[in-house]
Length: 264
Ligand SMILES: [Zn+2]
Image (cartoon, rainbow, N blue to C red; front, side):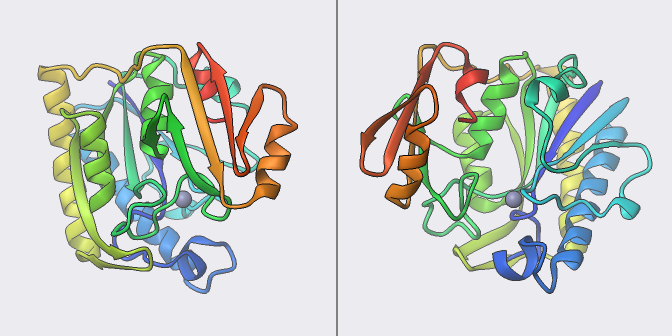
């Protein structure tokens, strides 16, 4: 079984601060990259324990956050910024059997979620798809669901686990950090988080093999609503093709192809 793994840094145990751990000029950024990479390696070990034959890892955090030298020797890594167009990268993963997410945070606006945001923590207030608030988990699951690839596992912050379970009730999650507020959390230890991820992700793949999880699909047509913090960002978006301004800070984008719509 071929598994595609999307990674992020904000839902890793021990990572709690944007400025110190998630931005490249943060004084603990390199240390945080090592924490993420150890969770990726634990996830890879668990997947191989359960019979995975190939793992492709996507370094999904904005500026990149995989510590390459420490990365599991049996995985391949998609990395580099700016990222390739999605259709270029998709050729390498479209025949994969399942996808998983590691190090995930909840969508923007979830009060207790540590490091909550959707895409840009500096400009995005919220995304809605067909009237429903969505975050990066739904974006990823719907995009890959269109290829027929189900999301079967997620590790990260407690609210991210809840968000994933609300979208995909059969998903397996590993909760490694309980958010208290956007800037604080209770983490389990690095060692415990890795052990939990390895165990739960192996369970998720065995469960999926025995009883396959369906890819996430929502009915077309799609209306993506994107609200910014500032009018200037809506001014800029409105000038791009396909966007319609609906109020001072909000634009929408309509379409029938989820892959064309979901990451606008
Ligand atoms: Zn991130």
